[in-house]
Image: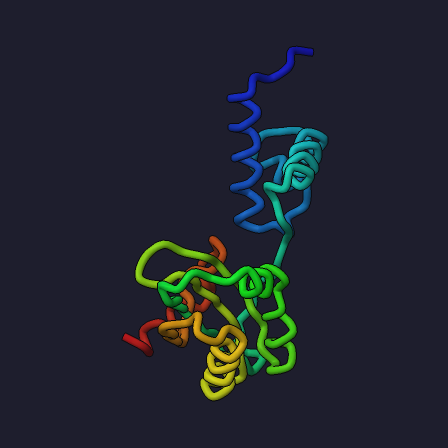
Amino acid sequence: MVRSSRVQIDKDEKKVLIQLQKNSKDSIETISKHCGFSRQKVWRIIKRLEASGLIWGYTAIFNEEKIGLEHFMLMVKRTAKQLEEKTVDIIISRKLEDLVAELGITIESSFYVHGEYDWVLTFTAEDLKQAKKFSDSLVALHPGVIEKITIMQTLMFIKKQYILNPDRKKLKEFL
């Protein structure tokens, strides 16, 4: 059997990734049909992507409103002051996870960004009051490090994690 070139392997991996993004719960057989590959090939590609760390994990997309939660984005601008090693260690250690567990908040995503803000977190909370407690706790966890925090509440997702909201017609209520 002829070995595939690196370019072809990359193309095949991208095909599988696109199908996983559409619905990671699809069976290997369904993914293989969409890609035009054998089941064994898709299985090998997925295992290789997981082993290389390209695929970090899988998740379910759900409607927060239906379980009594609201979705927020918190944007953090830090001061120009150089971070102490202790502060960096706290950030890396994910001590924040303990803090949010106490508050009943779940962090969906956390990322370091370039632009007006330095850090963005997306999370779910019961209400704006709980989200503000989280914001205040974050400032207390990192004293003298945060210059500004902005909280934005998500009113409605049109698309989330590559998936169109099946109830997106509800957007008319907001417009």
